Length: 339
Image (cartoon, rainbow, N blue to C red; front, side, top):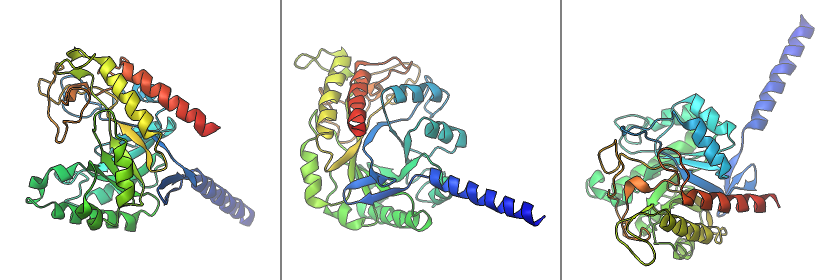
């Protein structure tokens, strides 16, 4: 009996150590995000799959989507709301892809910041291998009306939520997705943030943002949104009015080249987005130009965010020209990583 108990103890210790070995260590060093002590460069995509006729996220096509991401050498997915489905998380992990999990402020008590229920999600999934880091809010600095007209109310909530996350999870950094370059109020109000995501639409040239960030912060940053849509509201230069995949591909190529020439400051990008979304401008059964987004006059090449045309895949998962650009750029980066 003693010998059996000893064997059982050895087995439990072996399993425990083996499990710990499989859990990636996510940390911050200077301006870098590290995974197991190695700098991690985000080659990412924003992902919010909504089927035709709906306005709700649906993972029915997850297997196909992950295969297309892997083909394009995408290593990171950014989602705007938590995924409360272990099977989905496991499939993302099995694909070798990391996840940036976003939490909203007021989502009716569904894993949101206002109710504090986001903590329940973190406790539930903080040991899951797919998690890269947590992200609080998306472009809330464009919406003071959500916070009694005073953004300081948001920044207090943001900094407090980051502190709460650090207390219960020491293994993952905490970020926010800020619209454009944060001002001194945002920076000074949120010392508990580890990483800043910046949603940046500056035509096809985000270059200035990196020097601007370097001048105000020594923390890691990445572009949590960047890119272009595949519809031209007007004709401009060589790009004709109407659906125009070449305009999107040309813009994405220039944007990605600039981002990955500045990796001493920028930890990468989650390009917006994987799949067209037919619900953004209304009439969920058809694809429409139009839609609206704050501070979007910098969208190439017409200054108009045609919200239903942002995918590098169409809603049927057909590859647009921009998909091939992403695949080309990320494949080259992966090759450099292996050198």
